Length: 107
Ligand code: HEC
Image (cartoon, rainbow, N blue to C red; front, side, top):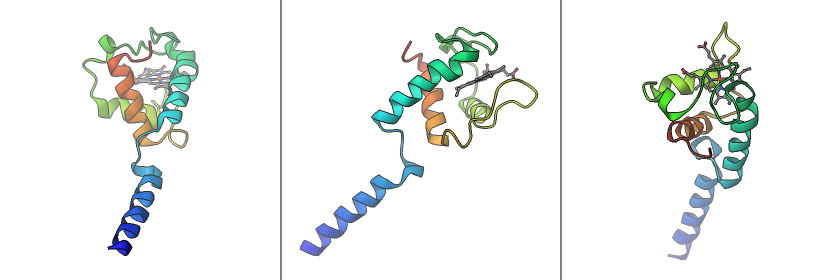
């Protein structure tokens, strides 16, 4: 009994520490919101109304498949100024960001 509970605690710790499957924690979420405003914002506008890049407001993204947006952010759009973020952002983080854009959170 005692051994089983110790093993369960260990397992829970391993699951918690595996970043690949983890959604961003609160601290990382704050970093991502900062990045969205300042880095993405340098092209898409700090309030996502567009600039060099197209607007990223919920109304503009309604018809865009999420998978397409995730790929655009991870790999960029060759031949356009949209840069790839793979390596800087994980797939999970990009999914989270696309969700934020869709819902118009943090505006
Ligand atoms: C250097 C300028 C630049 C930066 C920085 C940038 N983008 Fe873009 N982005 C663009 C341009 C330009 C396009 C349009 C590409 C095209 O013509 O297809 C685009 C397209 C997109 C699209 C597709 C929009 C649509 O209507 O299909 C998404 C989503 C997007 N960017 C998200 C982001 C996010 C999130 C970030 C920050 C992590 C970011 N971009 C940073 C320039 C930029």
